[in-house]
Image 1 (cartoon, rainbow, N blue to C red):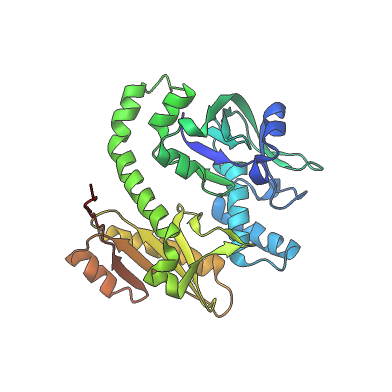
Image 2: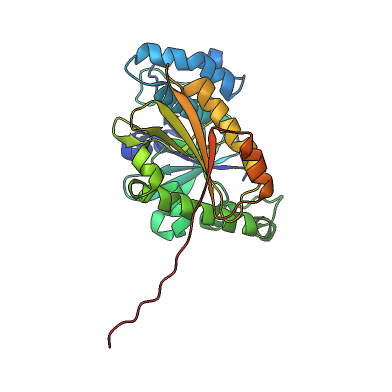
Length: 311
């Protein structure tokens, strides 16, 4: 398998069974609008053409909502490659899994008109997933990649790539998966405890229609860890989390995300800021940040307590 994705088939997976029976994955976002003329040029070209179409249809929506919707639509229609593994969550806590077998198809007049053919192979139960995979697969987004979980998914789905033995896949991934798990746990902890942090007093994690969309917000160069907005709605905040020590390379990474926000998401009168959160810094990142006035560095501290129990 190449890349693994989760694709939600309607709210709560309500159309998953219908799509599975028909042999497709499907999404909506913009209804009966033929997007084929805008495919083939990549995510940036697609968003550039389609964001204005979306906002024309839904003028009450923000640029953040448009970017999220059109980013998900592009990922489902073109970003997922033939041969990729897809997981479709169903209401019964199972995930149907299959292999994408073809390109984009337009099916007007249906609930999910934007489709890709899929050879559905079987299903796995959420309870059989590791806590980290279950947490990642449960992110409330419509289309997203499952990073650093290939070895576990090979085991769960029994879809090994004959050109790459399972042992090789696992050995090549162990360090990356451990690092990912630590950063994912840090991200989840921060999101769940956001209101009690110093950032939470100044910013809210971005939400649309009461649904949180600011965790793992998609961009043209990968997902942002957290996208937040100030209480007065005047500033967007990009949060990048790193386990342990942060290198100066993360400054360029967060600047790319901030450039995307500046170009694609800001409303008139808004500005963008960034914050890097890690356990340690060093001289190189301090010097890099000294030339990036709109990016802050914050440290997190992990505490471990032992308390006596009366016997």
